[in-house]
Length: 245
Image (cartoon, rainbow, N blue to C red; front, side, top):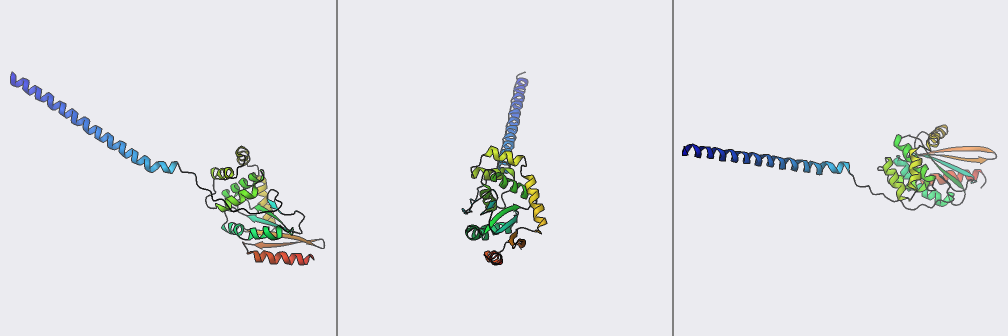
């Protein structure tokens, strides 16, 4: 009888030990699973939540008598229309080099009226979006500032959120900007830019259509590519001489 009771107790203890070991194993597996999930979270989370990208703020460019996407005297004897794409690296090269010299000289002295035009979605839909952002900034008097910021951050300027970040850095009225941008307010202007450029013989960006009048005859010169300032100087001086100026 005593032996039977002792056997029963040993069986109970063994069962209790077995259950404790089972619980320990389950807890161990649970902790391992939690650890694996935590490590996976640390790996995956940054891909979903990215820190805001820094903005490279461009140097100030003095542009005389700015009016939306134009600069200079509208009655200047020479008009230069730029056809450009915000994704075009050569367009950024022109902005960083030749454009400032033109602004400081022929635009500043009243010889040239300079107008920027987009070239539609020449390099893709992002090009039209960037042009839209620039024109929407222009509604608040900061077309050229947005132009400069986009080209200074070329390669990381895609997407509405990024363009809105640029608008914030320029202290635009964000509600007004987002309303303009979200409604495609300037789509017809952007489409017309491309039509006008193609009509003028533009096939690539940047291209520049220079017009002037000699004895009542309108003359046109197409300057293709991101040319050095010396090229523009030669063409402008030649036109001025032809006009007797």
